[in-house]
Length: 416
Image (cartoon, rainbow, N blue to C red; front, side, top):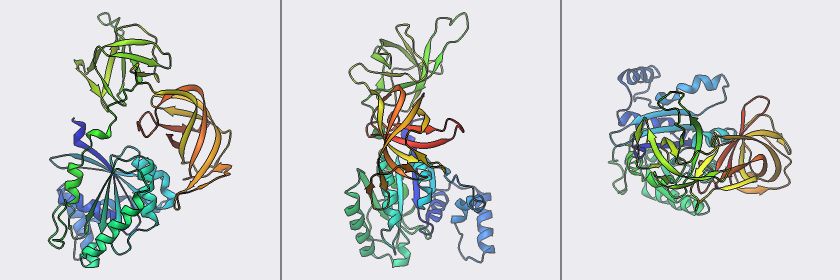
């Protein structure tokens, strides 16, 4: 599959800004729902006495789990148009769900931020935008929803755009687009709105289909974390030794000089293959098997890079951490640190500051972290990690902390 054809986007919104209706509208108008689902939703809407089809019912199937108090709450939806396939990570917007937002957004190319035209920018808008910027999501689309409730007034839209631009100049988001919509009536979601002739831009679906995502992957810094060493125990292949993994950055070609970390051994790439088929090159996010010219000792967790462009190697690591566990954490706590395909032990050495995620102020002198806290910390690992900053590479720049006793993932971190 051409990776350009898959867009992962995240949506976050507060309770009543129409997120479910918007996702329902995207699915409905792009014909990505099935007849039986539509019949069920139509019947259910009629039973509730609505004179329209309540599209939010399409996405609110999780309500029952929510009512039982089940906490994990990232719903993934899939839909496709002839131009692209889409994966939507839909997360609740409340502050107590910060960790869910971080989980849902961590692999996204794009964030959809919903604003209620009547309310303008609210605390949640700032928080969702900040998380999108923290996670270095390359593209943001700001949907100003419920335009029907402000009589499709251009001035209302313009003011929200100005306010948002003023605020977002402090964040690191390079590509921001704005679109005025009514998810309920379908204005500018999939079909162009007749009610807003003053808006000459693209519809939301057109933006999603055409946003340029090829350059979201780092094709400069070559990184290949080894997942698995392939040693087929058969007579014809008894000397074969391949290294399987997913390219995390850069471009690899047979004949390239490479360097293996942390050992520092060098060699050349002999072949690159997928399903027995030899390739001329491999780049992120392809999964391939590589063979090298020399027999060198390589194991899971090692990283293949280029001699003139290497990741950093260190045991003291600065991390922006989102604490995800109900139990709080103190200094000198120990964890397993999982980074790409590598696992080692680590210790929380220092909490430099915690971020107040609403005011973006730094809170210093913090002794412990509680669930949903985002903080800048120092981590000491037992073995050196080969890493990049998260800004440079979202794969080699991220890690998770796992509780040694329960094996739960307790935190996700971005290497500074």
